[in-house]
Amino acid sequence: MKCAAFWGHSGKALADFYAAALGWRVTQTYGDTAAMISDGTTSYVFYTAEQFKAPNWPADELVFHLDLAFDDVAAAERRLISLGATKPEHQPGGAHWTVLLDPSGQPFCISAARS
Image 1 (cartoon, rainbow, N blue to C red):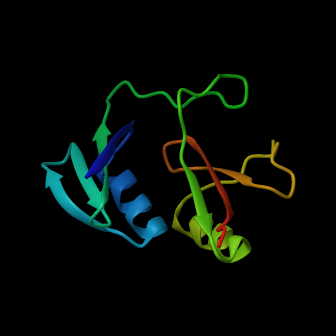
Image 2: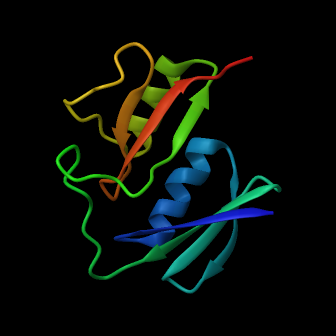
């Protein structure tokens, strides 16, 4: 199984956000400081980092970020914003992708799923 780890203000809140965003489920919690989500083949673990500071994007270079694909990008954008994402003014992807910020302020991109 593939796994990646993310840090933020609240690991549990980020796990809940991304589980809802991806249609996955929280599969494990580690007290109040971390939680894992999975679709059965890939897992993400979200940790609480007390000194977490979101990148000042786009000024700061990103170490990495998630690219998520959806069949209906406009509907996904509305749903993700209703879940707590925000849409920054700077949108370098044009018609190819949209940048959103997760509840911890970390950028991620959404685009159309390719068949």
